[in-house]
Amino acid sequence: MRVKDVPVEPVSNIGEKSGIKIGKAVFKIGWLLIMLFFWRMKEKYIIRDFYPLVLFYVLGGFFSMVTFLLFVRLFIYWYLFDRIPPINALAAMFSFMSASLFTLFGMWFDMEANKDLKW
Image 1 (spheres, helix red, strand yellow):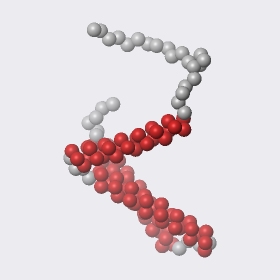
Image 2 (image 1 turned 180 degrees about the horizontal axis):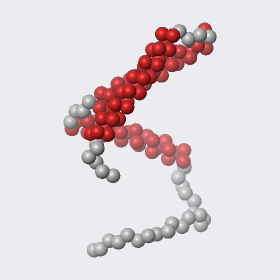
Image 3 (image 1 turned 60 degrees about the vertical axis):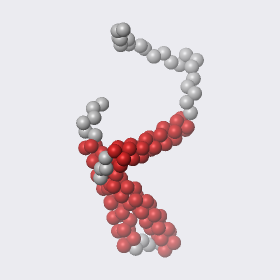
């Protein structure tokens, strides 16, 4: 059999209405992307062949949680005592920078591991 591309002009707004609810679609697609990311990390970089980018992603996630807790503590302290201790601000910023760097290194290693894939 032969296959041929045929250009087609889409026709819309002729009494048709989409049944997609944007609120539901955003959360379902977002959840699907997150789950597939973790599945890919597990299957490709832990089970099949261990690769250090998983450690970078784990450390980035850990420092992200620590950053959130430190900034919450910082704002509570600021609200209650109307001042911010410099050591608390320094710890929060160090944690934020560590989370950012670990996550970016994980993404960089992920790109390097998949650079042979073509779109």
